[in-house]
Length: 441
Image (cartoon, rainbow, N blue to C red; front, side):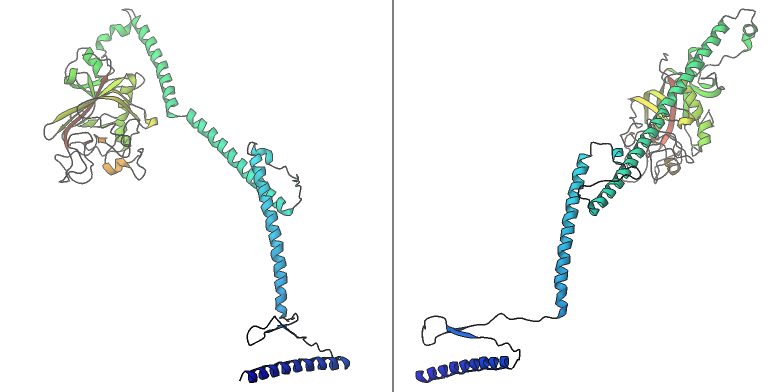
């Protein structure tokens, strides 16, 4: 059986070799006849010693040439373009690095030094178009930077002008004018003192009613009965009537505001609060212009008295109290608290009425960005955003629910936004009054 297999294998090899030889002969004949037919030479050789029953052979084929479609030519073109793009990217990268280094070097220089004059050409060592483009962009950035710097300088200049026209400086001007007027008043009083007995003014003095600056002057002049008096805190302005409390805490108090029965509405306009309204014998607001003149003539202290419907009475006293003029929106200055009612005017940094402008329902000067505190709470007051105290709120005869638009003092006992029954505190009586700091009963 084995001999038969060897014979078959040997016969197969001979057959292959014969076919190869024939192909070689055919190639020779074709060459003689002028035909161009390439034969594929095949060489057979052993690959080593025989191991086992079979002896392996190896075939070495010549290099093959494969024809591809013409579209494959695009591969070569694409590769070249990719290479070109790679070189451009490297050049741009180098230009950006150079640009960054140059920008770092120029940080200490004035940007105006980098602005190009018309017709000036920027020379680069490499002369590359990409570098020129980067340089143009840098020039534009420098111009924008210079414009921003100029705008900043203009803003600072305007800010300086505004500071020169600040409210504080306006107060200085006002104080300067007041000082000059006071000097003139002193000169007039001196001349009046020199008037002899033959002077008509002296002879008619019995018919002249002497008016005082405030209720404290009347008290010192011997007037000790509470009631309505006419005062003239500033000789440059007309006199006006006030209610004087000559009995409370040593007397001499000029009453600015009083609430006692709800007979007067305090939901008023800017003009009403400016001039004053109500009845001096009952409920009233003296008027912001008058309050300004009274607090301007002397250093005044403020006393606030409150009483709720349970009969509890408390007070708050402030050693310094001043209200600016209408030009400054009647700005409030109040400091140095003492008392039993709590310092509601300086509740915390979010609710602080000191240095706040006056606001009414028709004129919004408060710090609340989303509306008018005066319109929402139906009163005029030195609102913050909005308040921790409002003595001009609506008068309620008992506790109430809803919007806290009534008379309010944020440090009053048991005052809370989380009252279980939802009721708000109401006040029966409120009074604001002032007196000079140097007053001695």
